[in-house]
Image 1: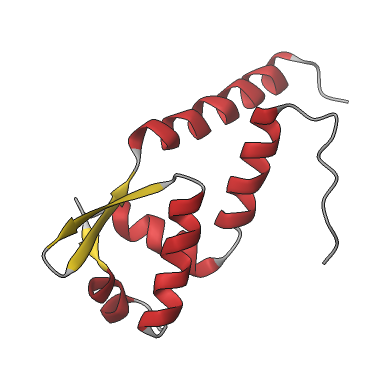
Image 2 (image 1 turned 60 degrees about the vertical axis):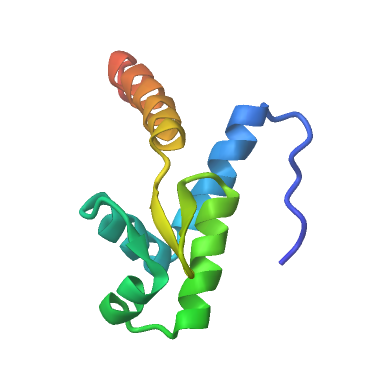
Length: 108
């Protein structure tokens, strides 16, 4: 895949595009759903829930963490993951602004 041209776009638009790319994988969406229904989890919890190997889940967790959607805290030998509410609210507010603007305008 080629390099995406980002010159001329706002930082917020580039950030949201990166987040949407990360969320564009079924495993990552499943991880977000799992975390939304759990206060926190460790990677092994996800291994029991998803049809993926532990290294694969770890890679997906890394991508979610890279864009800031989740955060991890070390607990003994494990990392407990949870949704980063500040980042998730930023995503929600961005799309609320877009959907509000669209609903105000007349449809073609």
